[in-house]
Length: 165
Image 1 (cartoon, helix red, strand yellow):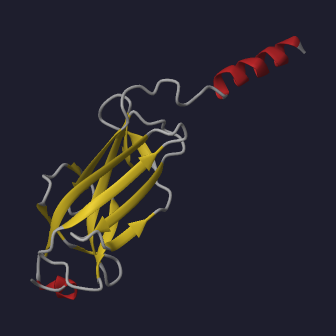
Image 2 (image 1 turned 180 degrees about the horizontal axis):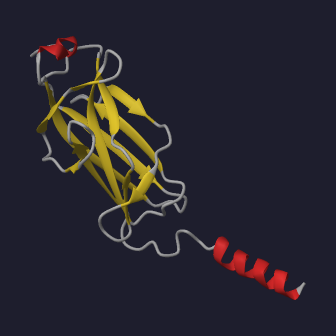
């Protein structure tokens, strides 16, 4: 009986440890893109051209990739938006995300990039400056907001649905 109680106590001690105990540093959210096939984390300059990609249905999307540092790895909520120069909403997503360990200690990246659909939109978006606007918050109240502008461009005539400048 003593052995099973000791084993149970050991399980509680390690099984219920605080997943946020090792979190250090200022919460930082980094926005990036991905390669066309969605397999790579690609930093890009603010305002850079980003290629529109055909989605599984009729829409065209831009890849969004995230890296989080200084956040508790459990219970991260991320609000993702694409807005235009007047802050009018083009796309919004709030569904849960899955993160994996990042390339630097204490960082987390998305398992897969997010396809942010930018068209069909209410108006043409090709050549227009749009902006990712992302807010991340963990269960401890750590928050960071990041924004990065981009310009959607057509790889071929297949994105005429998005309009041309």
